[in-house]
Length: 297
Length: 314
Image (cartoon, rainbow over all chains, first blue to last red; front, side, top):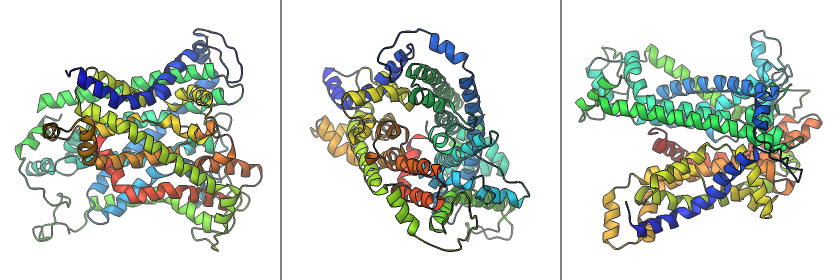
């Protein structure tokens, strides 16, 4: 433990960051938790403490239940394919000898994409017109034109596709980094032991990637739970709320209509609890894995 | 599960870093020693190439389609054209989009705001990361945990109080209001701290022997050594800020200070009241993508290296 001189210096180095985090993240989060117990609106000057009324409202809110369901569906059809495809691509790209830079460049592209610009492009590609890109493609297989973003059964999957497109690229980068971190000597030792091909993937590569998988899974899920831009640009939650995610619902409740920020804060708080639980679960899992590995070594 | 793996790894630590080719299914006729990279493609290699090809096409397709739409003949919702090759090439759409969307001011605002955020974030995060990585003080672990915890707070939770704060400071609907809430970023502190933790203690001890104080050590030892990590987080920061949508949506009410994503979203909303001109929208999307694409092209390696430094180990 350092003396007070070090403590003073550390304080000076840390204070700018803590001022920023305190004023714009930690403070607001606490304030938000307080507002969640009130019936405050953005426009009304006065508000009252309503205790747990907002929480009770949330648990009986059919619209919120729909948003939760949509978010779960969105997460399932985004995270699982993104992680699976991202991993497969990373495994395939790792051993590319020629054109490595080109492969990586192309597969990194979606991460850098401006999500609003891409949402605009996807909106166009999935236009309801029979001559739209997506309808032209499915038309090749004899499928009748689909009103992709205007149909309650396809709007959410199309929005999720944009999310998955981008997340797959992110997952790819992280797995590629994870693969690079595996020493070649491990593979050479496996080769000597006659462990090759699929067996090597199953018994060596995937176990070694387990910490990466936990990180990717948790991080991508948390990101996905906060999906906003794609919904806002592509569907505005429609049609008939069929693509309203939790975060978009919070936006609707708090920043449009009657600006019920008290209730919006309560929903956000409940979401935060879920996110913290996920994050903590991931951290715990990661730690147990490390412990097990150290014990085995 | 990993027991065998670890002992295998330990069994042969001195193995040379060998060839990169697939070690599976070596055709007997191929002289592997002479040309280790060239082998007859097996079924696995073909499957891998097919997968990569599909992946690359899927990754690039929206960009290509954006370009193809922007330079193709005019298209509206009533008359779409999905031919991969446009029947005619024009560049008027860029001019139209530029004026209809007021993209010039938006680009300036977007780049300016992102650079201002980057400057503030570096100024706050570099010293904090240095303290967490290199100094020992009471409460270090707890404070670092607090920093990490802030990463979990969704923007929607902080949006309302921040809006109140920014309004109270008189910065609502200003560029300062767009910058200030992002003045520091826990992710940046985390990534820099991870990197700075790898700086050997001997370097710090040597600096202390030479009589360098905390500030001098930070400025002339730590910052140069951490330059690659600083470059990485700068790329991330710029891309995140430039692409930010929610906060500008709440704060930038007047069109004059719209950021590029906001300008594009407004162009789309405006045009959906009439018949959307997809050629113009695609041109606008392309224009506002250029700064982040340029940063990406220049700094692609840094992006990957930045994730290598954190994601793999987490």
